[in-house]
Length: 165
Image (cartoon, rainbow, N blue to C red; front, side, top):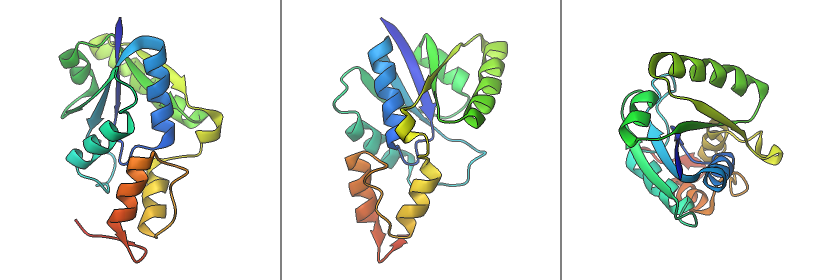
């Protein structure tokens, strides 16, 4: 059985992420979803523990998927977890350009290969940034995120504004 790593900040996990995780499970058999801190992205909405809890609840129907966290480089996580490949989801051509450069760098420095999986076409517009923004303004995100995430967001927003952590 092949084991793959799906790394990301997942703040929050959305249906595009879930689609790629489900595809990876169907194709490879064993998936580790690793929540990572991305210093290039501003501080998000959820703590690491919250993100892990929400991912676990959202992938509960996939027994072949494990959820972990890792501080550091993705290639170091790949080595630590003993995976065969990284799996990255693609929504747009812009995603491909960024992910291709990262994949080539990861291979150059650690010989870790990356497999790209396109998300379902109907989900290509979904992003965690948009989900956070909509939720902060009291908008309905149920058609963008798994049910556990939607419920958590609904409980977290009060009067159209996000509660402060």
